[in-house]
Length: 402
Image (cartoon, rainbow, N blue to C red):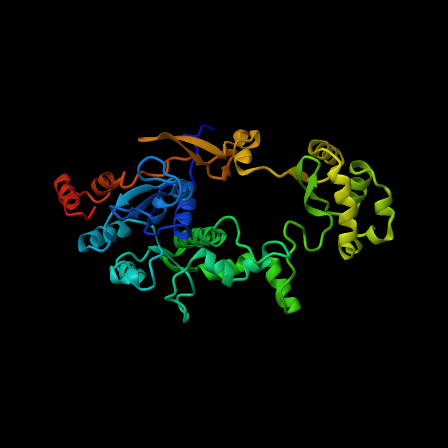
């Protein structure tokens, strides 16, 4: 099956993405990856905030912007103007889904709230992303990934035990909120097939951040205290983590007693270690963690990384190399999977864009639209979707509305 003939699951669904920065745009991108038509509304002059974050690509894009805006089209509207609000309203009434993350109460002032739109479009699915529960006392607080990583306890479980709390390398709260929001929208789309009615979906960054604590969160509740931090190690499985070979780090994940025995016999050639009563079961190994790790680290540090990886692979020990980010992105594995694509760009010539992770019927879903230049689809969308005459579009441009 060729990419052109691949049926896209959300083909025919239209998303109006009024959101900006990360959580909302991530949600829109997920739906776009799955085949939906995504119209991203941006300010005519500055666009999405992330167009100004990091390295410049062309005139209006950055890697940050591009990472969350593939498979979308950009339409410029000044939503602080009456004309811009009216156009957005018309677009919403022709859409299946609206995504927005304006400050609490801001969208209603524009006449674009759920109640205002669903009165005319009862089948509309509307997703609001906020920092905190919009029905609670903190509804008006703005939400920022870094703040919520701190407040939700995520920082407290991340990092080494002897170091301060540490944020994750990427904005995990924003991204997971975007994924949760996309799941909720998909559920609402499925339900609408039966009921014909839309939904008013609310997603809060704090709620989603708390979900990411997962088993650590439940351990904290069970023990009524913070669990210890283990950095790259596992809290209950030993040896499991990042270790230094003679020429670089490796990941080793010894998951059971049989693997541990093979690891000691066939990889580090220390059959005496699994025979030691302190290390015969995982519970014993965890209880005597430091003594065991001292022995293992000494053996690993004397052996080349590739030799260790080869021997562990032969012994059936889960392992891998700790790669640099660029090294990983340019690896044969990534190339074979088609995870990095090269898309044409009107100014830069070409631009690297990550491909969607979804495989349907053995085919990776395509990048149909590269992350858009600011406002590239404004004229086309207003003409084809709203039937707006060219002279009206010219007037709106002159007045700064689009």
